[in-house]
Image 1 (tube, rainbow, N blue to C red):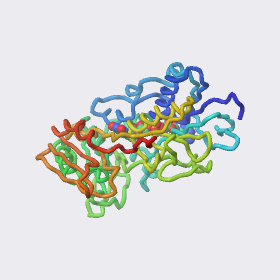
Image 2 (image 1 turned 180 degrees about the horizontal axis):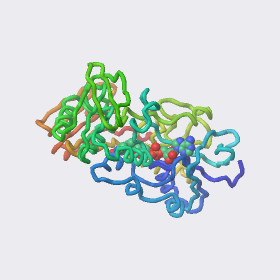
Image 3 (image 1 turned 120 degrees about the horizontal axis):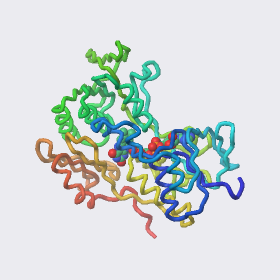
Image 4 (image 1 turned 90 degrees about the vertical axis):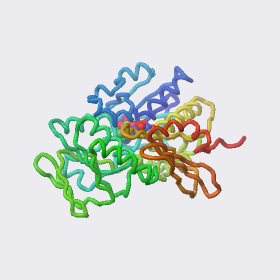
Length: 388
Ligand code: FAD
């Protein structure tokens, strides 16, 4: 590694770009190189699940192209460039035939959609949306179609159900989960969200497995284990995301649910850091925007010479189901406990307490969303600062 090698960030999602922005607030001159497998457009990923109601094309969701980002960040950006290997000993990245040295390396490689067994066979008929290119591809696939089958009833599946139905499509949701978003919210809250989505016309088949997905005409036909057969013009897979680990794994970095990093965002190999959807910080793999923004600010300080340890407050997530506004603070700090739900109709407050009666999480719907700030203040931080 030459002394003049740049600081390299792999990935230009919200994690990679926000880190670069934070670095530039502290250091105008450091040589910065961003490498990305995609086209490097800067966009806000949460907007992908609100784009159909607003009839937005992919290019309308992009805020800047890679050339503009490079100018603004005073950085070089290599687009359409896959990092295929890391050599931590020599501090070198493999980019196709070429080698790229680094002084410090940050992995911001995100997560990728879990795949259903029928994904390859069904081509454009069964897609997932995890970036701007996926969004554009899905929009093209939808041209002239009316009905969409969404597989998965987690946060992303529910958001797309609301957005697509608001965009004028007939939407059916199929999931093996017994109720919506079971990893995040208790059943009564899920029932309120489901009822409001049903009022808009979304049809749900929950608690059932898919036995087969076949081509039918221009669309697909799905057979469930309860014997029900559903036809749709287009399918969207929303069965979850898994951190991208291959690069890190092959380079010998410690892997858990994500790339394992300490509170300085440092991996198990010297001079390599990770943040965003791909990283597991102190056991937490949080695939949301607020944690990665907090991590970007902390890591920028460390990379610019002031060692900084990350801490997380509780960071509630707004779920974009406007049919039934929902905010969730999952009870990450509790080993065990229980939900208690109060309220009526679609205005619910659910609180998660541990055995000692301490509040660890909440879910609020409808008018109760207004209680978010007050309740957030009562929650323990997700990652507390180390006492000095
Ligand atoms: P990504 O955006 O996935 O970026 C990864 C980058 O790494 C890409 O540039 C990719 O090209 C690059 N890359 C990967 N491998 C390589 C390689 N080998 N070589 C070169 N480049 C590589 N969170 C919220 O908090 N609120 C929300 O409302 C919300 N809504 C969401 C809606 C949707 C539809 C989705 C999918 C997610 C949503 N999230 C939301 C989650 C949030 O958007 C993500 O946590 C965040 O955008 C992840 O950013 P990232 O930079 O870590 O990963």
